[in-house]
Amino acid sequence: MIEKYYNELLGYFSHFLKDKDRAQDVVQESYSRVLSISNYEEKIKEPRAFLYKTARNIINNEYNKNIRQKNTSLENIQIVDDSTLQPLEELESQERINKLNQAIQTLPPRCYEAFTLYKFEGLNQAQIAKKMGISKNMVEKHIINAMKICNKCLKEINE
Image (tube, rainbow, N blue to C red; front, side, top):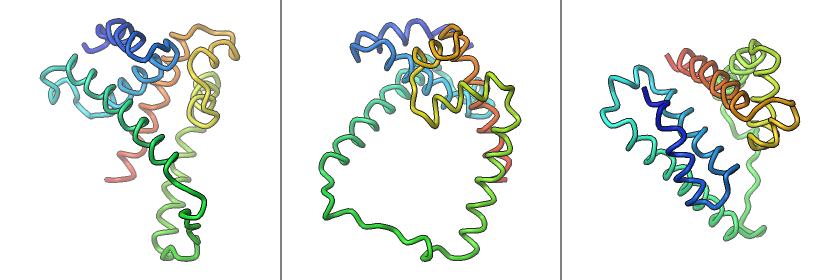
């Protein structure tokens, strides 16, 4: 099972990023992505290497995103008009949002709270743990469970 690599990844990325909270978020997101792959144990031959690669990709993507944001000036920003969406695309998009929202609403209260604080308010695991009065490990479990439900919902929508 890939869970046995959590502490190893956390230690490595804490040292690499020089920020334990940020490392926890990266490792958490890595696990979420890997666990979202259906039947991951059969598809992934080297789970340890796959987790490391996933975490590195997350860090690289965030770095590149930050670089692009710094290089974007206000003059180059073009506002997209929602009226340009085709009616069918708009309807499908709204339907996906509604189904995903319904899935999120079915989460247990504490799981819902941790997930919304993480995904929608941008708090890290330590901040969520402090705010909710629970351990960081419990926050992690809540977020993983919520991500599994969301990924299952998205998979059903795409079928």
